[in-house]
Image (cartoon, rainbow, N blue to C red; front, top):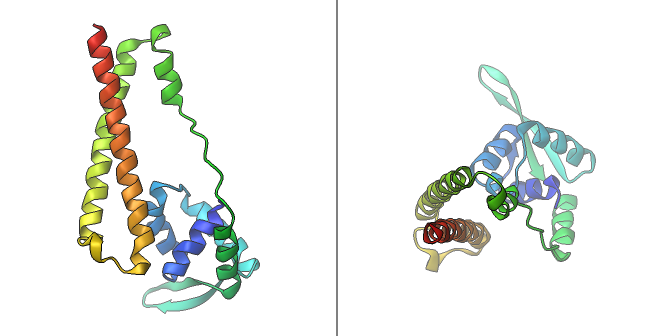
Length: 179
């Protein structure tokens, strides 16, 4: 996937300025697809040249005009094409896993401290995701069709964090049993 597709999905949901898109990435999409504000603006320019998005200026009081982007028919066609191609399995690449595997050759207590920090981070992220789920999807059984995809991504995030936390617990228990 390219950043372009993440932007197209976001604009298909709702038109936005570059600044608003960057904020959306910070608040939601960025949990699974990272992009800096600078990257977003650069890609928006390329997407406009490719006719996947179009922009118009919106006047603002006491501030410069704002450029608001929307998806075009060509952009929707690209989303349709992209969504029809099977997604490759994303390989796991984890410095942490390599460090854990090499614990016997390194600083065991530092690795265990790292595990505890990771566990706390997973726990905090779960709390954030669950609060978001409660705020945006308090009744999952009655989701509208246009909410289902975002809800399922949020659920995937919760499950991934729960798995990460469970793995940290297993690591800590295994090292405790070894003592």
